[in-house]
Length: 63
Image (tube, rainbow, N blue to C red; front, side, top):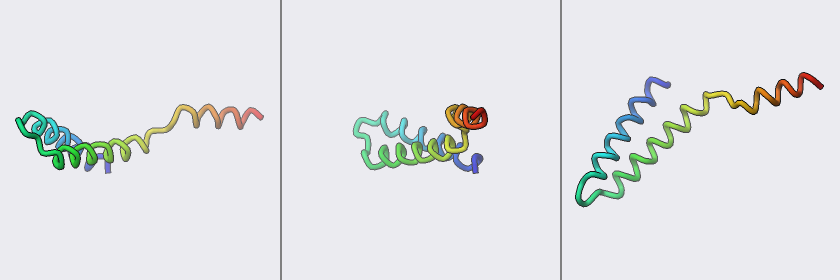
């Protein structure tokens, strides 16, 4: 799944930056690129473990 989201996010960034460089940027294209990028970031960071969860587990095991 990570292999799918990373190129998709890079493509969304490229499209958003290209569209922003135009004299009259299309708001719908920029908004869509931003939403796709943020959705990809959300999916990728959901797999990253939180530092707080490890601390809470250690604290629970000590009690």
